[in-house]
Amino acid sequence: MRKRKGRLVVLLFMAAGISWLLASMPFGMEKESVLARWEKAWGRLDARAAILLDAQSGEVLYSQNADTPYPVASMSKMMTEYLLLEAIRDGRAAWTDKVRISENAATVEGARVSLEAGEVYPLRDLYAAMAVGSANNAAVAIGEYLAGSTANFADRMSQKAAELGLDSSRFVNATGLAYDYGQNEMTARDVGRLAHRLITDFPQIVDLTSEPYVQLTSTGEQVASTNLMLTADDDSMRVTGLDGLKTGFTDEAGYCFTGTAKRGERRLISVVMGTETDEARFTETKKLLEMGF
Image 1 (cartoon, one colour):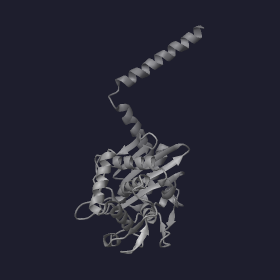
Image 2 (spheres, rainbow, N blue to C red):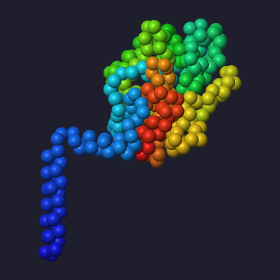
Image 3 (cartoon, helix red, strand yellow):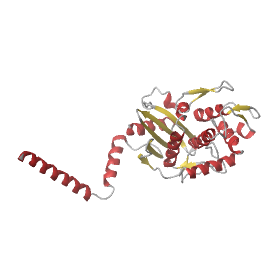
Image 4 (cartoon, one colour):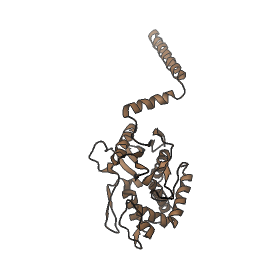
């Protein structure tokens, strides 16, 4: 009995001592020390900005310069995807709808698939080309179909951003390309929040973004995914459970990638912005995801 009381007293003294040490630390020191240990173990990410989220709770697990807006390039197509999937869900559009391609859509630069001005293509093909191959002409065609013009669709993108609480996001087009009139800008935090809402509200999107390529029914064209992590032989880029989500690149934005992976019942979302090489956006993504798992 006395030995039990003695052990209890020792434990109480130890608990009191630990509480005193924590209480005497400057506010935020515990968090900073955890972050310092994390960065010591993994190293600071070689990226302009980054964030890691738990997809179930939305909890931020790691952030690096996550609240400064930067050019976001084709990662902004996640908003185009959101608006399209919302229109499908609400019955304002259907996958079998035929979309006539404008001259404006047909001649857009950058990543693209074979779309001829004046011809019609099923909406599902345009969606697949945009989500997997990051096709700019498909994204413009979708925006024009849903809103009548590129400018009107950009307004809808900004309105939806406000509804979703993406307060630091600015949209001027459906693609993320840079023009004289401007370019889309988001913080890493807003990109992560957008990805979180996209996966939460439309979880079926990963059925498509997990595919290394898709074949368009209308043209027979095989469109390869811009997400090299899906087919990587290099262990520095391979992540178990990875099934999305969206790449981006312009000279202004650098190489960017929003990734997501699921292991068991846990899903994580990562955002990497502004790396100097194509490969780096994926190797830094692996660092982020392995941190969380």
